[in-house]
Image (cartoon, rainbow, N blue to C red; front, side):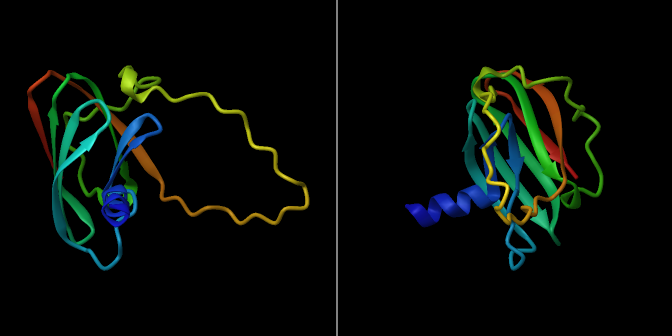
Length: 136
């Protein structure tokens, strides 16, 4: 089950206040499709991508409420008009981000920066039982 969980985490993560779509897409998977991944808050996600770009994201909301999607900038050619820039913290209680103290790092530690792709968050409101389709 660990391998399956690792693959699912490469395709979708739902922590840190948002649902991150394709956060760690392997380079040798330039095109593909995944269906039925379940994110926090009861959101069922289907993702289709081609040539390392998003083609379609379907979100089925089981519980309703705000859905905040996060996309790496290099995945998007065009942004659907019904995705809005977020205002403040995610209002969905399932995405509350705990406040964590800054780590204590030794002044002699030689840490290399982590290479995280730039990304942006987008919000839309959902109703329980409805499906939302975003084409890119």
